[in-house]
Image 1 (cartoon, rainbow, N blue to C red):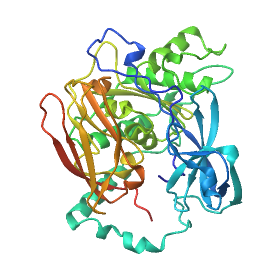
Image 2 (cartoon, rainbow, N blue to C red):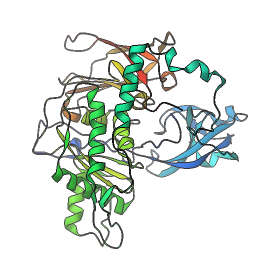
Image 3 (cartoon, one colour):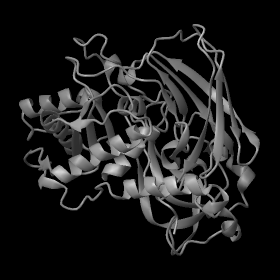
Length: 429
């Protein structure tokens, strides 16, 4: 993961979302999950750590090492994240990486002592490069047919509207007086096109925006931005500012109850890639909504708050198809790295099953460790069952090919076995 890219974090934990088997209900159990973010900085800095705990994940549930083991190590960082600790209190943690932007872990910011501010940021043209870069030419990883497909997929992505300039047809008013504003048609269509870009890898029918849903989602995003205190379905736990009418507040509450929510990014690509990646959630609900049985969406954005309406309690979806994530064949690395992989099934299976999952890196010819296998019947995106698992993040690399085998599935299901190759949508210069 390159640290100049914004990621998401869960401010309220995983709020469950379900399918529409009981369309008359819109309880908390039906809600799409809440996402998160970070604060990126202008330039990378060098840090040393001497005490405290370095966590492997930003949820602070997996310890990587004691900082005292790395007293002599120089780390690099260009971002911090605000997390909610298990005791409910917020804290700022710094993301640590090596000089090439490879993520190492997270530590409380007070334990990271700055050594030097650098003139480059991860991903910039003047950042240091590895001597072995010549060995990473894409012709070493792809045959001519694959490389042609990669370039076509990149061209398709580049053609999608992704600008945030002039994104509002009517700019929101979020303090003193309240007006949710209105997004321009290009921004909305760009968001829809990014959803359909990922759906196209599965041959899924494209979704479209619903003008009424767009209005609802804009209320959701604008009320979240007006409060500016994180994310909440139904605005639960938030106090209504006095300048927002009860009617407008109710519009926002209803919208956030039926939407994927995110904060910290603005562009259509960033929002959709984060929902698809779904890092940090045990059940990849955002991903399943966008790759599931939806036919339409509503798009709302106010400042860096996003509301993506994905279902209507009265029922609007279709049957979901089996989804392997990442999919067989070529698939975007940005969506697949530093997150859980998954198999989403239309049928409902027993959550007590214990499937066996193996991953082999065909490029490096070595096995990838897999942990934390979870089976869920939460019903995101009208899927019956979600089987998700966590590949070792350090072993998932761009341009590499992986073979995934999932066996011991319940109900007499056949084993699932396929290969994927992860290409970066945005090729480094």
